Image (cartoon, rainbow, N blue to C red):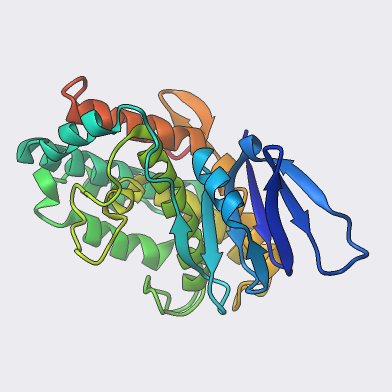
Length: 297
């Protein structure tokens, strides 16, 4: 399993002999090296981190996703390689030429899977999920009846034991935790999409011209309940989650290794995401009809 590295202190990052070299301004701290081929994600939180261009290039060659954070410690950018698959041009043509009925079918399947996973999360927390199960069976092609929004309203009203909670980007906590976790999840999806050879900007349903990650935002939908579950654990632990501290952020770094059920087998989430994106390409290429999404265990 590839590693996720989190840097929250000033450091100098460079490369030598296919290694990530970490040096600290504090002369008492030992220089550290990590094989780049073992890394999947790097999160740069501290604004006093210096990184060499040669390292950025080497990370791109190895398909390492690089997050940088703002002064509020929230991910503000992702650096992805331009080319992730030798058959990229062929696969992008299939993606561009995918028919509208196919796209509508994929979106319906995506929303059904998302609502089913939300229902499973509620059940795991011993909460009533009958309504979500019913809604999941009512989703139409392209989710024309907007079952996703109806299910989300019920789900977020019931999943967290937080008074007056509703899902809003700038809403009360734990919205801050959800924002952070979804950012990491989006990056995992973007990395898998590029490795599969698809265009991350060309979405199935998300089409905002200002959004460079439309396809990632499409396929993460059934994966969001896995972030919600991590957030729920933090809320139930009674720690202070009003602000994001290092301990809470570190808990999100295990997101790529969370076990999910996919193809009737348990796999780390990062592996499952690659299965999903590859199956999506096969749908575009008319090799298969349905995208392979995970089930909440």
